[in-house]
Length: 316
Image (cartoon, rainbow, N blue to C red; front, side, top):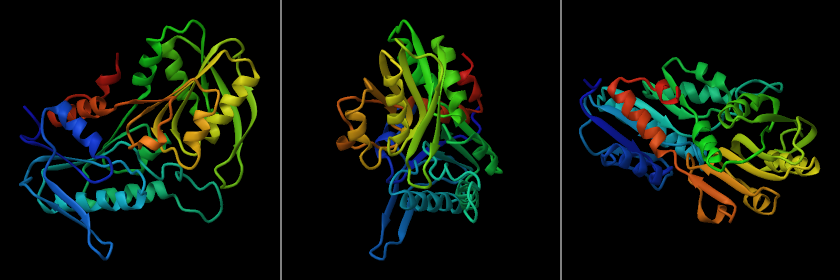
């Protein structure tokens, strides 16, 4: 028996295409809701159907404009709570402010924790997300968090390419686990970039590359790409050390500034990215390939609604 009889899936203005694809996977239509701004820049939300005691999922990646989309999410959660929803799950494919997960400088906030507090206070009973920037963000919540991973989807795509000699490149030491999980599926070795950031300028410098990459097909993996500095620096280091081909797979494509241009002009053969964030046509170069996470999120929503294991999705 389902945990709750009726499943309702709503979304704000952040990513309607993903919302529709998730609902198509579930075989239902998106819930009726209006979300807009008044002329005074205040966000208004009204749920247009009965959700009393229903199992409600609200899909809203925290994409640009981040603060507007965050406020939409918080207000939608509050509206659902005040409409007496039975259970409310915040489906956040991309969790913004994830880089602010610790105090790494004097007198700075831990914004990832602040956002978690806001989501809880607004009425979420649980959170469903994909590839948090830092695993400890799960611990910022006092409600259940299901963190899905796009690693199996991306890895299986490369597995079908039947590369002969592969090395998986982690863009820093902290990302070694993601590279290791990818390498395990591909039965490949890993290499790691040693880098350091230049202040708060979103610039990086590569100081070392650990691992053998000469004459091999290299796959760069990362959780998100912002300005493209880290990925481009990794690609350049691979070229210098004789890599045969360079591919890149990333979960979250923020692609700010000149990153689309940098990717297009880089040595990367193909840039694979999921649609956890909306990526406009002007940000998609000839090397960019999109992979949908709608089935991943849709299956997780189905399992949560019916009381089935979400972790079992990844056991195989």
